[in-house]
Length: 230
Image 1: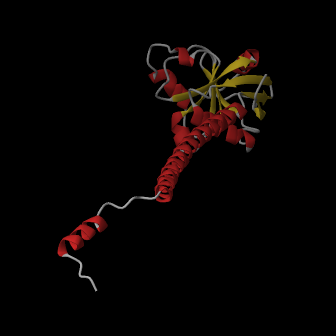
Image 2: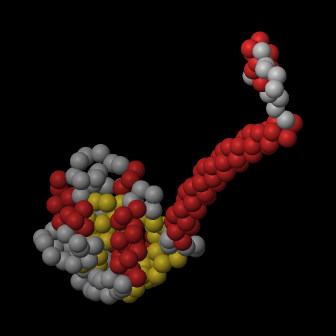
Image 3: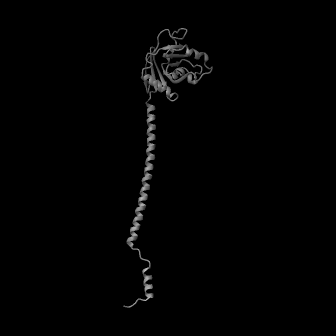
């Protein structure tokens, strides 16, 4: 058997260690893997991007819906009150923007019938007519003596208000001014204005009273009805 020379073995070893060729199938396989990975990353990005956009739009829709709901609730509130008295009807426009909490309480009390049968127990000419309980001595008289000597547009004639003191004590009386009066910001919360029935207010103002400004004949509120439009 012929012996192989060392030089021939060395040359054969070098030939075996030469770079091997990569098949076309392998290249295509790895290219497909890269394409799939890129597609997966792109799909994931689109998914989370669309989800964030949908969440933002949804939040905006909810906010707009809540705003619309609040606006609709405001528009559903009665804007006028009709005080049916023993002398006739007095129509009052409620100032929901300037005194929202007081108007809400007034509406709630009207719906409960709080003012039904309430008497005008104090009438001061060229000042106010007052309906409510007659506890305390001469609240309106005290206002007349201690009020500041300048007028406020807020307290012109035929404005509807309630006493701050009694309001804080969970009681609610009604005052209708019959003339421009000294500023009563410290005493009175104005929440409405008479728009029809001024003649009825003036008729009540003209009744005879005793020395405590109490009418000598009973004059009262029969009931109060609420309405959105007149």
